[in-house]
Length: 481
Image 1 (cartoon, rainbow, N blue to C red):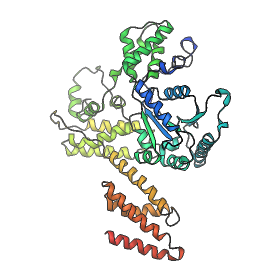
Image 2 (image 1 turned 120 degrees about the vertical axis):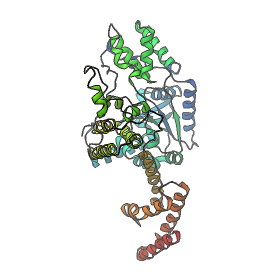
Image 3 (image 1 turned 180 degrees about the vertical axis):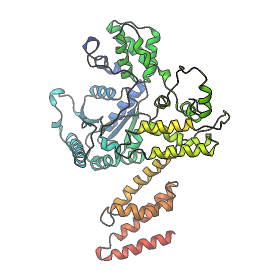
Image 4 (image 1 turned 135 degrees about the horizontal axis):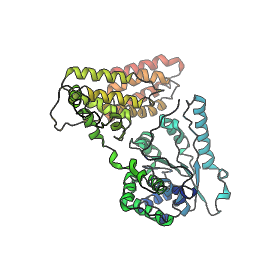
């Protein structure tokens, strides 16, 4: 199964360009004083690395987050070079987009565990010919997270818990935030607290700093560009210095500035204006609007709903969730509501888990056009509060329950007394009913602790007394009820 990726609005830069090399590599900072990153953030990162190198430090794992092109990796590399620290980088497996079998996943996990073991205990993994003899300390840099860890972060948590007590050198994870809160999904707050993970968050590069850096490149390349075009390049990058340098080099390849036309930031819409276009039918798709527009000039250009969804800044499936959550508040006709709900039901049946990501654009097309088309009874234009999808809260509660169940199963001996299927099918529903699905975290935690103690005592009885352990669990359930 090939993985479909969203194309960027900026034109891709070829490898052989002006001067035969990409500017983003040629003008990469070589010293700390050349970084565009804020000086306070550099000092914070330096302090975090220095604290992790102490032998009595409880924080051996560093988490560096930030948007793309904000200088996370280059800051870590230059700081380590300035502090005379060797960097042992994990080269992730190449994901060719095909279906990953269970054997390949287990092989990836084995390679990652072996890398952590060798790099933290043996210095021979480092090619000493690339470093001076003055480099005494080492750090492990993990920039490419395995795809299996993004799908199931608990696998990464188990590996880190396994090696946490034996880590001799710090481990630095670099994660790029795309607006979906990916770092908290891979490293939840509970995991960060248990493993003592220190977090350093990088902000987007300011527009003024990007313009200053671009001017320095133009001076060294003996190129000239007007101030308005330079400002447009910096604003479109949205804090991504790498994208700004690539777009600047692309513009300098041509005599005119027409290549900048598809790269203006004004082409993007915010979330709430995009939702309003569908909820109030700004496209003219309803029956009344179509009859009125038929008398107008047919050559007038219209905006496609799919383009508005792409410019909203959200994934297509997330945008559909917002429409599904709010369309009832903007429709008065029961007939319209029935037709829209039928379209959303059809969207749910379009794809399975294997083709879900490929079908996301089609989900958005069907759902968005349904909301904008079935709008027969107009409502007065007034402020209407929109809500975020309940799916977010459901995922949050699901993660809470899953992370709370991991120590519970470990405390009762894992598969010794009960297997995983029996635990989630028999014991977990009882605990959820007692805690109201995680709405009261303390009540849920107390139920877990109480049931954990009962099961732990029952596990000591032996094989011939399993029936008595079941009686204890039933008595515990009767007492709680």
